[in-house]
Length: 451
Image (cartoon, rainbow, N blue to C red; front, top):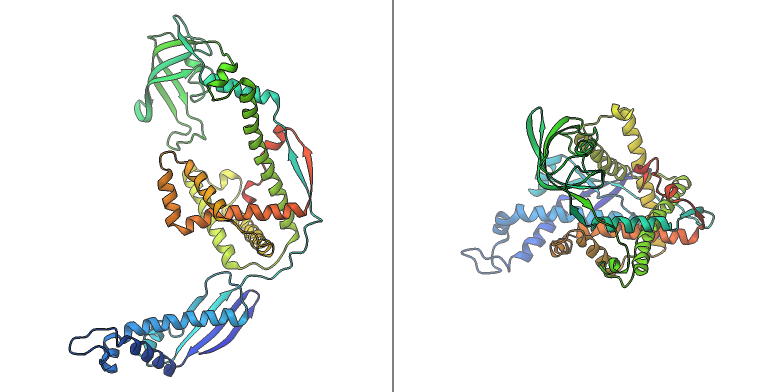
């Protein structure tokens, strides 16, 4: 096997490989010889089949395996001899195309092919101790805990049937049929539906037109679906609902005390408050962590600049662009609606793809140097957490991951990334900064740039 480098440009490499016809013949002969004692052919004793007959019976099939093995061997040799780290699977171009393959299979010519490779870049990581980051910190306000308890109590608030006209806060039990242009639409019908007036459960304007309704009343409610309504076929359309009020109930008193807490499995109201505060604090800490990570990634993006494997960039861009097109189809929006053009959007999303690939390569390099790994226990815990999101289907979800290694890899990747982030954050200079909850929860201007 002759291997010659024909291209070394940036991260691209190309190698010409030639396997002489004589070598192919020897490999074929060897494979057929090893088969003689195993095959059973009528008229011949095991191990006594003439080689010419073996070649006639199995030659083309075996030669196909010989060629594939030769390509795999060449790939391994190229990678090992040159100490390459591949960014993608090698691309093989057979000289002569199908005709070249045919000649090789028929042992009528050399097997010559080019191995095209893109390698991972080499770059110096350096240190992270000069990175300065601020971690936004928020303690759960007492009023938020109180509001959470009020919401919990409201969900179990007693209602008592009442006579007369309804007011805000009353619960109506209604039947309704929705129509657009006089025709009923799918999903627009309901029976025995509870609606608390003033709760904002229904689309804007619906509840307002039921204020003052009494049991037995029939009303026609005219509203328009919001432009951003989740069902695209209804968004922005005017509709009318024939509503029948089956009953009216007034809200009872909210009592938030130790007995109320026991309904949630807590010994006392103080214990329930602590549990609520703890849950809310975890949510805030999670947002704080995401903000810190974003700041770190922004800083790393500024610091590192190296050539990127274009195959990886193209794969990431294709993935992003596919999601953009899918979202447009679902929402019915165009680039013009976003005050941009397709060309400008492509440029921006390609920049995002390049950022993701660059940071991904950096994270992988840091993880390798720091010997970061995800344990089986950590992976199992993450899969269990994923399964919990599908009540009643936990076992099916678990079995899916046990049989699908690609899906497991998708679970492992973010776990690995978070551990690498922890490594870098531990080396950086991090200062806690107390902020308001509103400031913490404020959306980033460019969420799509996240890795």
